[in-house]
Amino acid sequence: MNRLFIHHPLFRLFSPIFSGIVVYLLILLINNKVEQLQDQFLGNELYFCIGLSFVIQEFSRLLLWIFNKLPSSLSSFIKLIIQIVGSMLLCIILVTVSINLYYKNILGFTPSSGELWMFNSIFCTITIIYVLLHISHHYLYKVNTKRLENEYLMKQMVEDDFMQFKNGINPTLLFECFEAMIVLIRQHSDKVDNLIDHMALVYRYILSKKSKQLVLINEELLVVDELVQLFNYLPFRNVILNNQVNSSFLVVPGSLLSLVESIIRSTINNSEKPLSIHLDEDENHLIFNYLKNDKIVSGFKKEAMSDIDYRYAIYSKDNVLIEESQNYRTIKIPKLLTKNNS
Image (cartoon, rainbow, N blue to C red):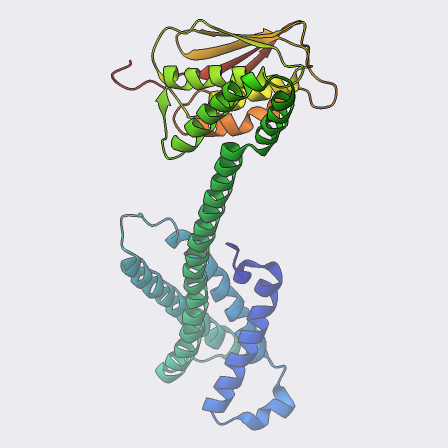
C-alpha cells in the first residue's frame, strides 16, 4: 500500500513516452501545426519531448525522496509548499537548459521567450500532476493506515473480551462440577454444599475481578486454594498446593487460576499419588514447581502460557519463564511491584 505506482519500473518506463507524446501534441496544437502529424509525427521533436519528460520525471522522483527527509517539526502545509515550489523550480531549470541546448546544437538558433514559456508551462503542469499524485497517495495511505489500526484495536478488544468471557465462564470446569454434583447427590449428599461453596467462590472471584487490572497475590492465592479443593471433588483428582509465598506483590487477576488449572489438566490423574504443586518466590518471580507427569495427548505445552505471558507483558518487561529438568517443571511468573512494594 505504501509503494505508489509512480515508483513501479513499468510506470517509469512508459509514463515519459505517454507524457512526451501529449506534450508534443499540445505544442503542435498551440503552434497550429496539426497537419505535420501525418508527415513528421516520429520526428526529432517527439523524441526530444519524450527524453525531457523522462529526465524531469526521474529528477522529480529524486526530489520526493529528498522532501521526505525534511524535519518532522515542519507543518504539513509548509512541507507541501516547499515540495511544490522546489519541484517547479527544478522543472523550469531542466526545461530551460534542455531547450536552449537542443535549439542551439540541433536547430542552430536560440529559442524565443514565448517558446520557453510554452515549454515550461506544459512541463510544469505535468510536474504538478506528478507531485499531486504522490501527495494524494501519501495522505490516502495515512488515512487508511489509521483506519486499519483502529480496526486492529477493535479486533483485539473483541478477542480480549471473548477470552475474558471464556476464561470467566470456563465451560469445561463448569460442566465437570455439575457432573460431580450429580454423583455426590446420589452417593454423598452431605458433600454437595461444600462443592457448591467452592464453585461459587471461584466463579464469584473471576466475575467480580473482571474489571480490575491487578490484585494482591494473597487475594489470588485464596481463590487458587478454593480451585484446588474444587478439583479434588472431581473423579481421580488429588491435588495438593504447598504455598511458601510470604511477601506481598501484585498479579494479573485470574492468571494464577489459569496456570494451576493448566497444570492439573495436563498431568495424568492419579487418585492414589497426589499432584503436589509447590509455590515459592525469589526476588523477581513467583515460582511454580511440580513433578512432571504429562498426559500423552493433552500434555503441557508452552503455547498454553502465551495468554498469561501476553497479559503480563503489559505491566512487566520480564517474560514468563518455563524451566524443565529431568523430573520437574518450573514456571516463573514475574512479580508486579508498585512503588510502595519496592
